[in-house]
Length: 362
Image (cartoon, rainbow, N blue to C red; front, top):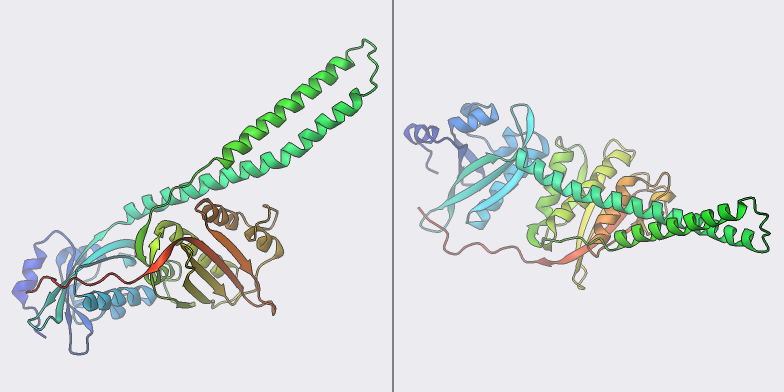
C-alpha cells in the first residue's frame, strides 16, 4: 500500500469540498490516509484524529459501522458508489451524502477510494417534511372520513324520527308542523353534505414512485438514526427492492420507532424480514420481543375503526399503505411475548446492481 505524501495532502487542502482518501490495506481494511482542511472544518476533527483509522474507530456506535460497511461495499463494487447516512458533525447529527470513486491497480484490484461528501441535512429535512405532509394529509382525510361516517347514521335517525312524528300528526296551526318540516329539511341536507364528504375521501388517489434501493442499507440507516449508540439488537434481511422507497422508509421507520418506545425493555431485539410475494408485491415483517399489542391497536391494523387507545400513528401507517394498494397485519404470539407487523407494498425483489466492468483505472 502506497501512503500519500505530504504534498498530495496539501493539494487536497486547496479544494473547497470535504475530501477524504481511503487506502485498502493487505487485509482489505479501508484506512483513512487523507482528510482535507474542508473536511476537518465540517466535522470539527483534526486530520491527525482520522488518518490511520477506519470509520469504525472514528465515529461512535452504529454510525461508524454503517460508514465502514459502505466503504467495504464500494471496494467490492469497483465502481462509483453514492450513499447517504447520519454522522455526528460538530456535536450535531447531520445527513451526509458521500460519493466514493475507486482507484484500481493493473490487476483490477481497488487500492484506494477517493471520497467527496456534502451536508444535505436541509435537503433531507425538506424531503421528510414533504413525505410526512402527505401522510398527515391522508390521516386528516381519513379522520374526516370516520367522523362523517359516524355522523351520517344519527342524522338518518333524525330523519326517521321526524317521519314517525309526522305520521298521524294533527296540525293545530301553532307552527309545530313548520318546525317539523324544518327539522326534516335540515337532517336531509346534513346527510347529503356528509355523503359528499365521504365521496371526496373515497376519491383520494395516492402517487407512487418506483426506484431500486438497498433494503438492508435502508434499515441500517434508520437504525443508525433512531439508535445511534447501537444499544438495541437487530437482525435485518438483505436484499434489493424495486418499489416505493419513500413509503417503505416511512413505514419501517415508524414501526421501529414504535418498537423502541413501547416494547417495555431496555434492550429491544428486532427481526426485520424481507420476502418476495410473487404477485407484484413485496412483504416486510418487523418483529420485536416486547409486551405485544393492546387489542385496539391489533383491531386497527387488521382493518378496524379508529378507537381510543388504538394509536393515531398506526392509523396513519395503515392509511399510507392502503392508499398504495398494500396491506398491513399485526399479531401477538400465543405466548403473549413480542409483536409482529407485516406489511406489503407494490414492488419486487431484484438482483443487486452490477458493477461497471469498465470502471476508471489509474
